[in-house]
Image (cartoon, rainbow, N blue to C red; front, side):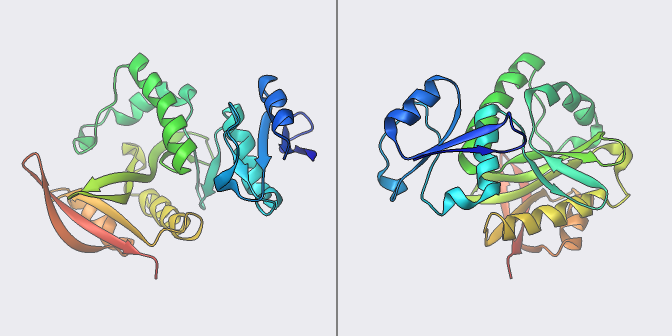
Amino acid sequence: MLKKINIYSDKDVLYITDDEKEAEKLLKEKEAVLFVCENPENAPFIQGCRFVTDTEGMKDHGYLAMVYSRYKNIPLQILETERTYVREITTDDVKALYSLYDDEALKYVEPLYEYDEEVIFTKKYIENMYGFYGYGLWLVFEKETDELIGRAGIEIRNIDGADKNELAYIIRKDYRRKGYGYEVCKAILNYAFTKLSMDEVVIVIEKDNVPSINMADRIGATPIALSAVNGCEYMIFQCRNN
């Protein structure tokens, strides 16, 4: 079996096959390939093949678009809100991050590396976080202007020995107090519950970060614990998929 699926245009072709030799040939030609077999867990090893599915998976166009985009390094648009859209980061976005992070109010946020190192980090992040987990920190853009106004998403954070899915966000200083943080965080929570099938998302906030504590309360998060890291106390908030 060999199928050619046009994803975004006639030039954006995803090849779907259940033939190992055909898959190997296409991959050597730098094509995007989805290998199909009855039991993906027992699929044969094919050098360079990043995605395997069963016959049901090949019917999901959203999944097929994701597979093609991963091969071709095309950032996925994750969601839209009334005033924003959220998409994956690319290395082309790295320069714009520095103006976003140039803000004394972001003392709670881990700083960026120097530019060249941040580009390397971003490449690895795209491959390992987006590529393996399918989520991570994304970029937030205002629809009307296409300006980068924030960064938000779901990170994996170890809290007291257990890995948790954490909602994290920053909003550009000139866009704060306008409801953007609430708008984006509510949409990401909904995405985590409905698209990523998460049962729980936590928010980790330093005890004196009053604006973020108020935000957690607004989106319906419940304080459940305190945790200390390097002498700093954090409040742990929980959001449940009810």
